[in-house]
Amino acid sequence: MSSSIIRSQEQHKVFVASSDDSKICVVMVGLPARGKSLIAGKAMRYLAWVGIPAKVFNVGTYRRSNTPQPQATFFDPHNEEGERMRRAAAEMAVTDMINWFHDDKSKGVVAILDATNSTKERRKWIYERCRDADIETLFVESICDDEELIMNNILEVKTDSPDYQGQDPELAALDFRKRILNYEKAYETIDDNEKHYTYVKLINVGSTVIINQIKDYLSSRLVYYIQNLHIKPRSIWLSRHGESEYNLTGKIGGDSNISERGEAYARALPDLLRKSGIPPNTKIVIWTSTLRRTIQTARHLKAETGFEKLEWKALDELDSGVCDGLTYEQIAEKYPDDFKARDDDKYNYRYRGGESYRDVVIRLEPIIMELERSENVIIVTHQAVLRCIYAYFMNVPQEKSPWMEVPLHTLIKLTPRAYGTQETRFKADIPAVSTWRGKGTSAKHQEFPADKEEKTH
Image 1 (tube, one colour):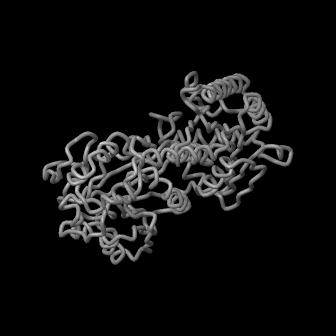
Image 2 (cartoon, helix red, strand yellow):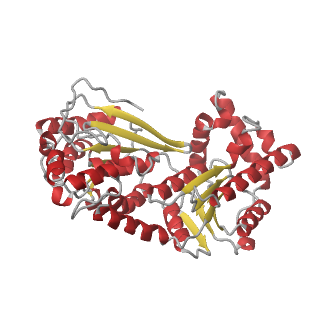
């Protein structure tokens, strides 16, 4: 095994072991339309991205197996049959969650129980079930009285929630409003009587954060991540730099200028961004790396829009060490063992004197935190870095992320939603070479086929 891979794996062991071998159940708490599912999904993707096995257990999914599209009256606290069925769904979810933690194959570290968990009685029951199974609990309550944000969430739920699929959107929104009112009848916020619990309260999208009884490293890390989240509607745009002079010759790394076609893409980027759909009066911040090809690509975007632009060293391309400035053919000839080792385990392989994809993820973690605090951002950066950022938002497994195709001259728009991230791609009509190489394929540099069409997801 390559010494580069061994070093990277040892670093990963330290990284995961720092969680103190805790098993944690993150218990979401809050009324409907308060962003609980969005927070749960993001936390799960973040943990998987940094290598911590995590899974969301959504009680609504269990409930839908028996009651797929209930009306608001089902959630009335005085509806005894509805209460019985909702309790049964919660019991199934918690039982499956505990089994998942104790399954040697899953190696579960963090489970996220996504439900309203809106009464003290329900939270006490969850706490005791977890305590008896040697699982720590971390309650995360999202409180929001901002009507605009609540309405945005209702509008999203009526179109995206499985509870309302195929229904008239306006009737769905009306029913969902009634559902919220039913939950409000019995809702009990976490208070001083529950001070023995570990919890974090996010009030009005994190404008106020209350933290109680955080004891271990993994919980504190999770809380730090969660308190950086917001549930305001926004999009993130991702683009590689325009085709570079190194791209033309198949060389990796370096700090080359963009080519003539790369310059054409830089000039086309402002219009491509507009075509992607930007709400009126939306401010977008431009992020680039510190390397010339990204700065050159973003300069027309800044000049035409007047948007603020920031350069981040953490967004620089993966450091290819001694292979910097070489083509894949030259690497295969000069370092055949390394070329094979990288094909065998591309995520963990570290270039001699350089980085692995795992290293890039670790240095990108502060970028992700800042990105979660931000609203609308367009990131102009490099292939490996974009693969890592895209994998975070789209929950791509670590071992697959280094092999994803991220073509030049293509703008990717990501819009986080409660039930996943919506992706759309916009391809500029400007040719470019292909820098993608499939696993186990030839190291020979290939030109980008002129007739190849890029898919829009």
